[in-house]
Structure formats: structure tokens, C-alpha cells
Amino acid sequence: MDENAKSFTRRKFLEIGTATVAGASALSAAPIPQSEPDAERAEHDRSGTNPIGPNDAALHDENPDSVAPPPTDHANVKPFKYPFELSHKRTQEGGWARQVTVEDLPVSTTLAGVNMRLTAGGIRELHWHKASEWAIMLYGSARITCLDQYGKPFVDDVKQGDLWFFPTGYPHSIQGLGPDGCEFILVFDDGAFSEYDTVQLADWTAHTPRDVLAKNLGVGADALQQIPTGELYIFQADLPRTSLEEARRQAAGTGELSKDNFSFRLKEMEPTHRTTGGEVRIADSKVFQVSNSVAAAHVIVHPGGIREMHWHQNADEWQYYISGKGRMTVFAAGARARTMDFRKGDVGYVQQTFPHYIENTGTEDLVFLEMFKTSFYQDVSLNNWLTHLPPQLVMSHLHLDQAALNAIPKKETVIVPV
Ligand code: MN
Ligand code: MN
Image 1 (tube, rainbow, N blue to C red):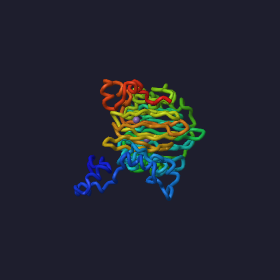
Image 2: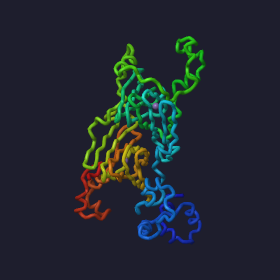
Image 3: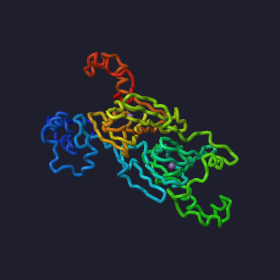
Image 4: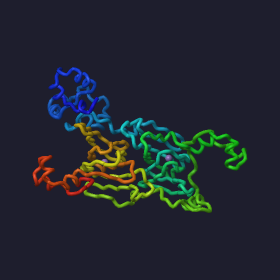
């Protein structure tokens, strides 16, 4: 179906009538979108009532803007929300993992996400992969290791609010520390990336002829008798017995540590933007140098606040909702707009250049991540654009008077003040 057909309103459809039979049969394949007056009228008569009640009361309550869309919503916009709660949870002794990829959320072609839990001592097996890995620690702490392109090791302990970034092919590990391990979000710069398809140490050694492995490692066959027969992925181990400093000394041996810093203390960073409505911390490669294919914005919107109307020139936006409740309308051009509700644990997605806002609809702070497959964060603020044009041009479009135009903030606020 072409874009013109999709944007036909019910009124236009009726005007065409039966005169264009071929066109009408093509249109019948898609639901006829509601027109704005229809939706407004329906709010005041019985058109929108639901006599048998919600089929799923919990889903109904969590999705008020799908149950009763704002009249400004229109036509078909691909779904842009997927809750981690619906993902398969792969649980092993030592922790669990679940993922949201393009298989789950078809619009999310550029980035994929994983939610992982490791117990105290639980290890995500030594591994590497084709995508680059960005992460934020949400709970507890972990010891991470990585080897850089010069063969130099990196070891660090990360806690809540810290980030890490492991470039494509760099081998790494994560181990939960005391007292209760950790939980974190991983973001990969490929929507089709699967966390269950990584190159893992014990998987590789199990699939290498034993004599080759012995020769390569320079050990006798006896030394390999206990070697695992397949991948470990996540497994329970003892907590590290060494301090961070000692672990770094052990990893460096007689050599040096990596000069790159693969971790970043996001929580300790001053907000990039702050208003009475909330604050934003932008961590792209300007401040977190190694993170050269993923840019992040950590956003806090206070109750009543709105992440202002904007769009991104250079990348799709992948979102993870850390806490609170909100809603987002994505405008997809051609009269297509859709509003969806979000809460802790949801993934959201906005395609490159599609305008959107995010409103806090709860009573506590709305905290979420905006993630982009790019080295530098970019956005366009509607307010900043409208106030940097010849005023007459703007007034001719929106039929605003001079006083209204003067009231629009003259620069990007990022979070609308409350
Ligand atoms: Mn990894
Ligand atoms: Mn955005």
C-alpha cells in the first residue's frame, strides 16, 4: 500500500465512493483510519465504550493511550514498544539474561538490548562478539575486564550509574561482586545482535582438537582433563579474592595496563542540561572517548515535565525506561501519529528524524535512556528552530500572533520547565 492510500481519511474514502473500484479494493486491505472529528465525537457518545470490560485489566491500565488514543493520533505507525517482561529469560546458576532485538521489536534495526543479572560471584563467561557493547549498571556492582588492541589489560569495578563500552571483538568478562551481585542493561550497535550467539572461551576450547589445544597452550594432555565440554555463558564462582589494585597488577604482569578507559562514571558527571523540569547527562565520545559507535543520554523528567518536542538528525533512538511512567507520541509524517505508554522495564524506539516528546505521566521521576548508534549526540529542538526563523514566516504557518511567538523559549531547554 502506498503512502497516499495510507493517509486517506474516512471522509476522503467515502467521497471516492464506489466510483473507483480498483482503488477501493486496495484500500480495503488496511483498516480505515479514524479522522480527528470522529475521535473527538466518540469521546462524548457510546462509540468508544467497552461493554464486556477490558480483556486484560493489567495491560489495559498500563496502556491508557492505546485504549483511548488522543484524537491527534492517526493511522498506522509501527509499534515502538516492547517490555523486557515479555522476553524469554535464560536463567542459569549465577544469574540470568533476557534480550530485545529486531526479532522482538521490528523497528529496532540499529540497536539491541540485554537485561542481565549476576549473583555475587556470578560470571558472564569470557567472550567477545561482532557488535560493540555499551552498558549501564542499574544495581549493585561488578568487576569487568577487557583486553585492548595493543594486548594491554583493563580491569575495573563498576557500580550503579557507571557505564562501560567494549568495542567489536575486544574480549571481556563481567563478574557480580558482593553483597548481592548486580543487574545491568547492555546495548549493542546492531539490532539483529543476539547475546546467545557470542564467541565464548569454553565453547571454543571445547570445539578445538584436544592435541591442538595442548600444543597451543604448551601443556600436557593431563592438564586439560577437566576442561568444560561446552559454553558456560553464566556460571556461579567464588567472589574475587583480590582487591581491584591487586587484580590490575596480576593482569598487567610485567607489562602495562591499557591506556584506554573502558568505563565511565555517568552518575558523577554534571548534568549537560538542567531545568526545573529535570536533567540530562549526555555521554558520547566527546566525554567517554572509547564509546565511538554508541552515544547515550540519561534523562530525568520530574512529575509534570516533558522531554521537549524534538528529533534526531543522525540516528534512530533506542530507549530503556529505568523508572517511573511516561508516554511518547511519535509523528511518522503523512498524517501518521501514535502514542504509547511506557514504564520501568520497557524498550522504546524512534526512527531517525521522526519527531517526538516524552511526558512524565506518573507521580515520581521518569528516568530513561536515549541511545544512538553514532559517536556524537545530535538533536533539533522545535522551540529553538521556531525562534531562529524570520518571525513572519513562523506566524504565517501556525497563525500565532507576535505575543505568542515571543513566549516560545529562545533556545533548546531539553526538559520543559515545570
Ligand atoms: Mn559482551
Ligand atoms: Mn529523542
